[in-house]
Length: 116
Image 1 (cartoon, rainbow, N blue to C red):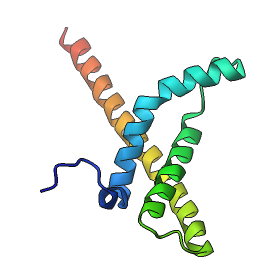
Image 2 (image 1 turned 120 degrees about the horizontal axis):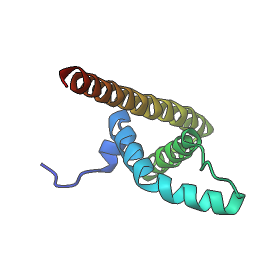
Image 3 (image 1 turned 90 degrees about the horizontal axis):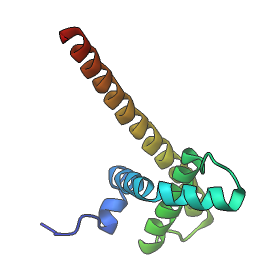
Image 4 (image 1 turned 180 degrees about the vertical axis):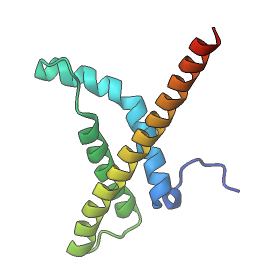
């Protein structure tokens, strides 16, 4: 078994790429919001979905480049489309996890309130 968490082969799969994107977003969102707010004089931060799309596209293009698969216009086009699909899966995965966590927290609050 390889001791590396992410390899180019793992990142070439939808699951591996989505996991990597979600980790990158979680660790960079706060910093990007601070920079965005200072530069743009805003207070609401950089839109998360836009950040997910940007990181998804960059990561997928890097994976395809390092695998030597960006050899035609069709490959570039399909990589861009697949980047959008990857971003959508990452966004919906996070929404699903957040909704499940919110339901669990609501149930715990309700159980605590009714048991008191």
